[in-house]
Length: 138
Length: 292
Image 1 (cartoon, rainbow over the protein chains, first blue to last red):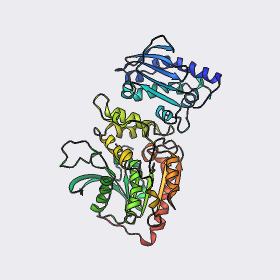
Image 2: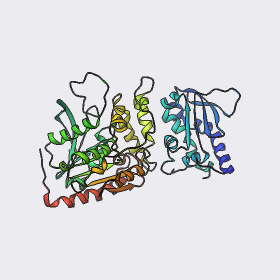
Image 3: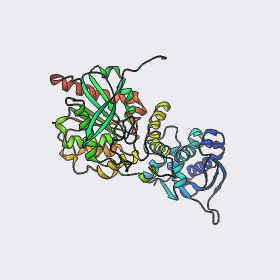
Image 4: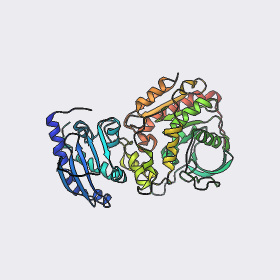
């Protein structure tokens, strides 16, 4: 897996924390997830977030660990992977959530049903910082 | 422009495959060297609509794209009773050869993408003398799986949505939005279990490692073109495959993914035009235009 500097780690974490606000500004994506209620673990490999989704909206995003908090599935990637994924024009092999798992830069674990049943929702949700590219420096 | 009618014409041909009659839908345009185009797993011949409508190519090639049985406008055969669809190497090879035979095509060029690219390799191994040239897009003898295909057909996951969402990542980010959505629409329209059934060939039955070395490109030229954004059949997969085949031509296509002909037709044209030009040049002494 690809390491990244502390500064870049911090930028990725900051960008993740802004995803709920970006989602609220993307009503079509909320609509796509309207049947989704899920508690999951998303984010950088070592410092992920507990994310609660209700009817397609993020109702809570809290840095892990939270004592005895459950999650159904987890998608975690290296900070380098997030930084590349969020580039306006990502490089080949860094441009898709499952490209990242295939190359070993991300790990998908747990009960995958909510993730797979709403795969395009999660791809688009986790790509939202790409639209706000200035938030992350490569 | 309002009122524009595209030049390709769609028809049905009845084709006997493995003893059963199939009603196969195909579209064609142009005259000259037969160029048969094979769609990807889980989609249909509409992927080739830009190539079919290409005025320049149509001057020298009879461009034909057909829907495999169970795909697009080709129904399953009449003797199908609902059992799970599963494409095999033998079945896929029979289907292509039977289609070409039914149309009485004289040494066609076959160009296939993804599973179509894989089967092109099998045609090169076992039936090279029947073809004028073979073109594999996103083709390799094998590639590492990156998801469990059981997700593609189960009652608690929408089949159209999951098929499209999975392959969406195989489209290059540079591809035009309209072409991206059109490519994905083909996946959203596939029949239940058809994409999964096609992948039985791709994942289980069609491993050609150790066999491609037998390909003789002096009998039939072989071209392999792969998009740089294809992480399913990666450029490395294609290069590794080509390295085992003497005389195979390889091109890695920039700013393209797994669906070059439909995700970005203009970009794809830059790469396929020289290949078709070369095939045309090589064919001039013996060229025959055969029409049915």
